[in-house]
Length: 291
Image (cartoon, rainbow, N blue to C red; front, side, top):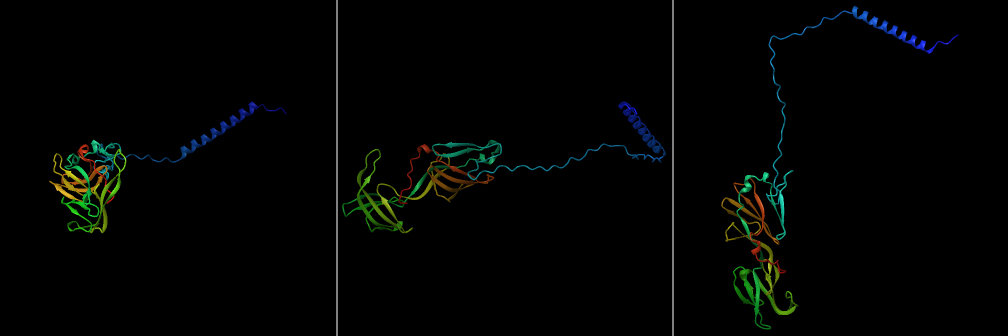
């Protein structure tokens, strides 16, 4: 039996598929015509005319960032995200100063601080040995009352009741003394051991140097005035409507922390003041070993 060509097989399959499709679509058409049709619903229109109405805008919750608060160092030290302050360093005083951003400075900061630092001084011990007189075995020291300025002669065993001090010993003997830009020499140096009845300690005085207590105080004045006020840490004083509170006092470099409170300020104004005329302030010695 001869084989059927491949082209005839493909043509027969296509014809069979066409007849099947025609029969299927015919069946669906007949079924659609015989199914009951649903009535189309008519839209009910209202009697009022159309009026356009705007939709209410959604409620949006907004929050504003709080203004940057000054740092603990002072009210000028204000930092913001995109507006940092301008910071400067003084090589002579070894301190930083700052200029706050103009956009963050409120009207309060335009008020003058009203006080300036004149100088910082170490507190001298209330009795000083400034010299000596006499001879071997009969030495007398030249003492000065640092509180009243009184000068008097005294030896070992003398009590100074108004200062609550007692002179326990007085000695004058040669000691090596270093001279600047020269060799060390031996000179007579008077030393006195004084008993402090307030603290129960012995303090050694020397006629070659002043002895300090280890604490410091400051002199402040209003701008343009020469009359100065002596202040110590913790002191509080008033000038007009403003109240000033003294914080820490530093001697090297010289500076005093003062906080100002005023009805015209929204918050206290705290600043670290430096001497108003630092070039004219004399060199301040550091506290001696007798403190």
